[in-house]
Amino acid sequence: MREELEKLKGEAREKILKVKDEKSLERVRIEFLGRKQGKITKVLRSIKDMPPEQRPLIGELVNQLKHQIQKELEERKKNLEKEEKEEYIDITLPGKRPLVGRLHPITQTLEEIKRIFLGLGFGVVGGPEVETEYYNFEALNMPRYHPARDEQDSFYLDNNYLLRTQTSPVQIRVMEKKSPPIRIIAPGRCYRRDAVDASHFPMFHQVEGLAVDKKITFSDLKGCLTYFVHRMFGKETRIRFRPSFFPFTEPSAEVDISCIMCRGSGCRVCSGKGWLEILGAGMVDPEVFKKVNYDPEKYQGFAFGMGVERICMLKYGIDDIRLFFQNDLRFLKQF
Image (cartoon, rainbow, N blue to C red; front, side, top):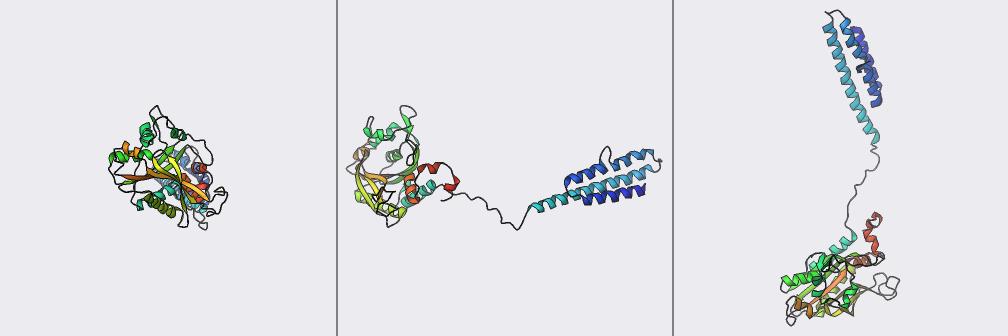
């Protein structure tokens, strides 16, 4: 019996060392340690037919062999797993670069706008995106049925609340709570029921600015916006003010910059005019000051508003606003 057990031991070891995968190893395990037809199992069952005085010794030898084979099977399994990993790792190939996140171009542009005005001493203030008619229109000198409301086709939630069409209401909220001097910008999302095309989208980002103090003039507004344009688009960029109308400023102006594509010589982007409109501005209307209990004889101020998407499109030469919201990584990875 000793010779038979030694023979089984050698046979098991030889087969275990030869296997090349875990499936073959499992077949070897079943061959020797299987509960029904395993060779070691058969030897254990045959012990009952041996002389009583030999049974303890033979049983001990068989158990030792069983444990030995189990140990060798486990070691071979570990080696196979290690070999399998090494087989699929080619250390000569370049490593995989992890994907690095980046800020959306709108966010990048908005952060740059903030940095410029923070450098001029402006603070950054936020406000609710769901506004009342009072703050969104009436406090800004646009009473009910004012024609200017037609230009801001709105998303109404009920007869009094709507999604804000501009961030100007933040200016009113700040002036209600604080006395001059005031220098703030109000960035945030706005909503209008615009038809979606290359230059319009129902949701857009806006930055409104406000400065209120004694003896503020239109020259202060011009100097502030000229500095902003030069920081955002370069010192070689020219700026001009065109007379316009806004209900909450008087006098009002549209602000243009020389075309960043043709530098003012005329091209397809500027329709041959050499100028591109970027924002609206003006001196705060006295009627707005009266709404917040400021004395218009004592205080003056200027305000301006710009669309962040517009600034971003001009800065990076983007010709379709829809690209900002399609989440196409081929587009976003450029910034």
